[in-house]
Length: 415
Image 1: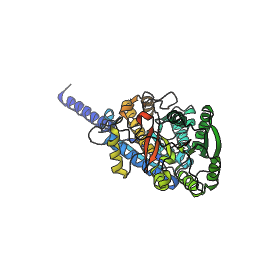
Image 2 (image 1 turned 90 degrees about the horizontal axis):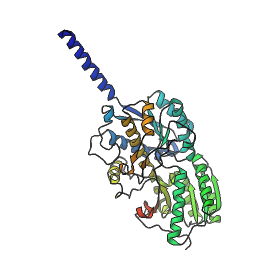
Image 3 (image 1 turned 120 degrees about the horizontal axis):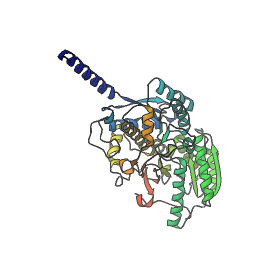
Image 4 (image 1 turned 180 degrees about the horizontal axis):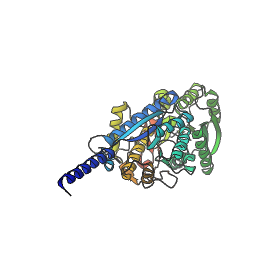
């Protein structure tokens, strides 16, 4: 080869290498579907802040944080490519969520989608991602039926309501042993979407298995203007424990309705959702005191998970509030997805899916009180154990498992 051809060849190789490097560093687009307007906007805007913080952890230059993808600098196995989030507004409408998911895939070229708060929107989004063969990571959809549909592209990092409800009844068994005052009766109170229906089905089954009598079984229309009739039914039943499955506005409304008729329940143990939102704490005020809820997250578990205060400080600087059950799950979901993309070394959906299947993140590399993140053949994380929290002075504190508790539970049943 003469010198001229050698130089041309070398130049071509250099150009190709530069092109490959540029291509490798292209942004990786991830679609994020949440209600950003309408009756779920407060939740959706908190979620948006959570995902933005997670993206900063993945993409930014900072001191390493003790979580998966916490070293920053982007996706090193894709040439330092950055995660780029494209947000879509579901307006809390399953059909709108379906259309937005399709738009994100076909127009914005999202290689994966995360979402979406309500299980009803998660159901339609995952139908779209299945059709287009793009991974859907359910960050906070809790209906058990979602992972039981034989979908290949569905993954869920957090617990579903069967896991949550088992934790709730395990707590009820443990507090009975600790105090000698068992809960003998429960009241089911649930909204009429897939979330409420699936939650109540599990609670009904586990109550029967625990020998507890269901003295009220109240299904109501979500986002009702009034819950006064339902409050009267709960008062008449006077169960040892009320088990609500409600979103934010309904959670506030039922507490106000019970207060208006002078009814103070012995115990409320919620299926999180609206009960874990900051808007609930603000709207319910003093009525929320001693309310209990299951949770994926324990802000006060910083001794177990030293990264919690670091990530919470980032979130608080971004959104002027602490992380909660939902926002912690959203951050964890995006970090898990980015970890899979990075391990895949590719932005191709099939490679991302294969990496998600192989995910095995220890709990110590998360902000969650979980054993870790590892998906079964249906895409469900099997290592995400829940906790029980109770409101003290306007903030949730962990009360169970007892070895993780920051406060002793206030338990008035049987007194």
